[in-house]
Amino acid sequence: MSSETILVADDDRGIRTVLGQALGRLGYDVRTTGTAATLWSWVHDGDGDLVITDVVMPDENGLDLIPRIRKFRPDLRVIAMSAQNTLLTAVKATERGAFEYLPKPFDLSDLVDVVKRALVEGRQRLPVLDDNESDQGHEKLPLIGRSAAMQDVYRGIARLTGTDLTVLIAGESGTGKELVARALHDFSKRRNGPFVAINMAAIPRELIESELFGHEKGAFTGATHRYAGRFEQAQGGTLFLDEIGDMPLEAQTRLLRVLQEGEYTTVGGRRSIRTDVRIVAATHRELVNLVTQGLFRQDLYYRLNVVPIRLPPMRERREDIPDLVRQFMTQAANEGLGPKTIDTAGMERLKSYRWPGNVRELENLVRRLAALYSQDVIGLDVIEAELADASLVPGAGAENSEGESLGEAIERHLKRYFDAHRDSLPASGMYDRVLREMERPLIALSLAATRGNQIKAAKLLGLNRNTLRKKIRELDIQVVRGVR
Image (cartoon, rainbow, N blue to C red):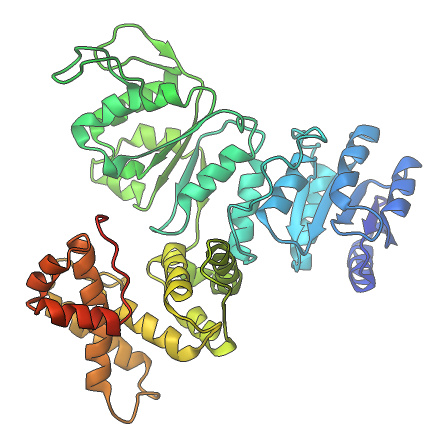
């Protein structure tokens, strides 16, 4: 039988009882309390080999208690638990010295594993923010979601706050990879340094080396002055290399040298420049497959993949959709679009949708709802219409094939719609409804392609200009001029 004593503090009597019984059956001596004051009294008297504390307590925040415990008894490990399952809670718990953070609800088996590890392993000495720094930059949460998948992401970010380890973020397009990169920077010791991002897929291949490492005057035709590359711009901070899988092989070789040696030379330069930059890379592609195909250096892959973080697609975290919708609706209201909500049936429909565009697609939909509909409560009929429009967009489905014609794409997406609504199709009027729902995005996209020029859009569509104007009014399409 174990002789270790575990101190448990939680204002929920039920949780205290469950933890007391579960840990007691394992042979631990368990003492429980509902207040932070009693817990601190026990710690101050030298009692306990491990502390398990809730964050929200009636007399004091459990997170504020952790630094005091660390200072008074450095070897006493603390496990923090909370129903406030946000990135901020996970980061604060780690910053203040918690051995582990567990979001509620949790499996007892997970807690037992953490308890055993905490009692066996040495203390993880993590950086602690000063009191006047602890909440700086924390007012706005960069990531939203309480799902188990997102909790894994939060814990991963929290564990990296005190390190300069290179991180590789993997995830589908639209999952929020840059948000994770920014969180890694904002909660790190480099938070006061610059955060510089570069998208490899958006830079012409012949210019990537110059963009990354800079160039000297006269290094190539058109180099009329010295240019400070992204490594120089990010000095003392974080460099985010987005879509790293699209980096050309010659640039990969130079990046590998930076990661190995900590120095680089500008294009056309001869002097080595020392760099102090943390690298965070991201990709929506399978780098292992690119390595096999000879398109990505294996040694660079291992240098980048020091700490991997996988961002889940929206279909794996559907329970986060209500929180995300509320957040996006709040942002839209703050921008003057008016407060709106989605009714229960509409929200359930959003949760059942596949979201091939992930969080970005959801955000765009919510902003569109806030901008285009006057009702305060958005119902199922509106949601169905908007999602039907989305399902008609070629490329929206995960099974989209390259090279298919427009007619083939529309047929495939109509088939998906009919299959999904086989038991709820309207009694009549489907022909007019499909044509109407195709008409609006067709006109809107044509206007966008012609930068709001209605004469050019009418010609593109083969419509009379007056007919186009009438349809714009009837369909309540917002025309933005001069912006593509």
